Image (cartoon, rainbow, N blue to C red; front, top):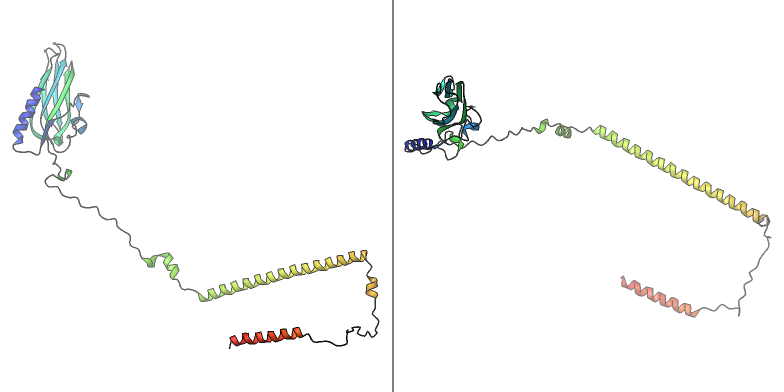
Length: 287
């Protein structure tokens, strides 16, 4: 681990004078889940994307084998398009196992896009324990200028185009066409005449109905009167009243005045005189 830190420090001192925008570091252990991996953020971390340049690989492992067995371990990375970016081979044939190996491989700055899959390849009889493989890198956060407004060359994105509003032609609107259609005067007159005719028929029907009701009431009254007379006839014999006659004779007045003279009512005359005066005064108000 001390060797790894020294290597990273040397790279930092070498590069810091020329480029200050880079960030430097090394990846997590890409072999923590197995002896094969891909050069993606899943294994390389957040910076395992465009803008990452690999400058070396540091790794360690412990070979487990018998001394007499043939056993070869190779750390390698495929190269996109064919071949290998690098290969580092360790031959453990006729050698004792159980000894931890630590190695560092220096590389020129190589874009991450060149790297294919990586692996610790084994040939022969043996196994690997405690494998730890890490890539040393520099990262340019402004590899894509559009990733940050503070990057050189950043261009403010154009606003999205406004949604296109469909054109509206009122002359093509069916509702407008119906509203603007010419009115048929003859049709309106016919509808009005039919409406008046229906109202007249309703009025006549109502009059007939009222007349029927009135006739029914009249008939009911006549029947009631007839029934009343029949009942009266049962109780009282009115024949004598119908058959009575008045004799055609002279009937003189039988009024007699006491004293023989009709005297004028003076109080009434005074009252009439006052009433006449009052009426005259009232009429004067309106002249």
